[in-house]
Image (cartoon, rainbow, N blue to C red):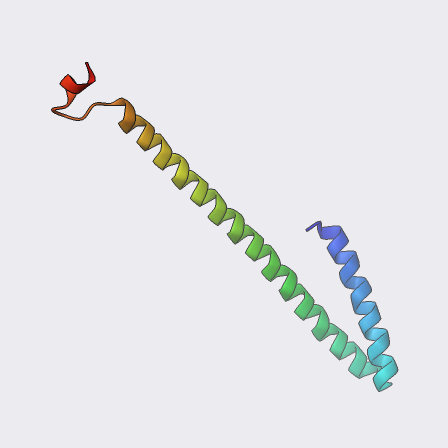
Length: 90
């Protein structure tokens, strides 16, 4: 999500919303109030989307680190003999 593009798109959507609301209701004060409410809802949605992307990336990195740690542990175990089995490797 590129922030300036989102901001310009949000302003465009709010402008269309304001024009349509004014055309349907004919009330300037009602249009301003509804447009402000719409802007808050859009911002909440944008904020929620960013939080979701951060959470998803964090979860992905955490999973990758766990998998890497397990594969490192498995590799170490494969190359080290267990107690009492040294004679089997000769």
